[in-house]
Length: 282
Ligand SMILES: NC(=O)C1=CN([C@@H]2O[C@H](COP(=O)(O)OP(=O)(O)OC[C@H]3O[C@@H](n4cnc5c(N)ncnc54)[C@H](OP(=O)(O)O)[C@@H]3O)[C@@H](O)[C@H]2O)C=CC1
Ligand SMILES: CC(C)CCC[C@@H](C)[C@H]1CC[C@H]2[C@@H]3C(=O)C=C4C[C@@H](O)CC[C@]4(C)[C@H]3CC[C@]12C
Image (cartoon, rainbow, N blue to C red; front, side):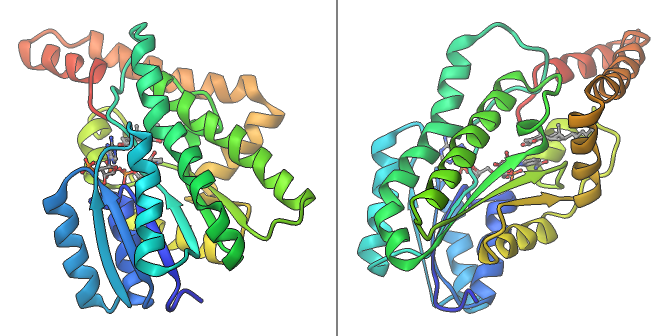
């Protein structure tokens, strides 16, 4: 289904985005990837070409700049003459820890994680309407359920649900033949996730390769939502709607247990660990 399709993937220099690029390359798609780090993008493009992509290009820049967000879409138009799939996946740098009161950080993160998604969607819509294409939005369990330690991040992911779920309904009503797939992910074993939270979160992380495949499949099949890993995200979603207090109790109990363990730490090494948990890169 994806052979010769023209696809943009954002945040594809590492992690799930990088894996999506490799899957699409094997399927023979035309690929335009983007992120900030040019050297990494170059390597991903080289690998995509070897894997069999119909063509592979990159454009580097930061998604806190809406002019750049639009430029990425224009580049696809220039290179491919149209677009079949827009995969929105990048996220900006944030901390994994208790909310520190920094509202400017929320504003900045909203620009990268949310406003650039809306900007690219608006810009790409004429091409997607012409092709009857797909918009794929990578979100998180933290974009469906409020979780401690992720206040700014979670806010941006909830915003995506509001924007894209509402837009999807308007598309149905207006008979716009563009699908919107929102992906609700659990903990995935990307380097950045493992570096950030593996010392805090005990549950195992799911494989990024399979995760990337499920996201692409959901987009190509025009599913409204993708849940990965299915059980780890779907069961708590049922609790969210039918027993919210019970879900909150389970999450808080986990957090409480983690904090008690940390408070019990006395030596220097453990104190360092605690500091890491409060202010970590996401
Ligand atoms: N891993 C996980 O456990 C989970 C991940 N997700 C979601 O999956 C998606 C991918 O996550 P993951 O693969 O782990 O993340 P990574 O950190 O591996 O990848 C993030 C990508 O975004 C790029 N990026 C970072 N800052 C900017 C910026 N300012 N402008 C443009 N691009 C930027 C990075 O490249 P560069 O630094 O070169 O710009 C990189 O390519 C995200 O939407 C995330 O929310 C959801 C749930 C769990
Ligand atoms: C029923 C539950 C208690 C389920 C809990 C699920 C928890 C463990 C899952 C759901 C969403 C996940 C976070 C996420 O969305 C994105 C990122 C960005 C990445 O760079 C670093 C890891 C991080 C913070 C994930 C950490 C693990 C989270 C909180």
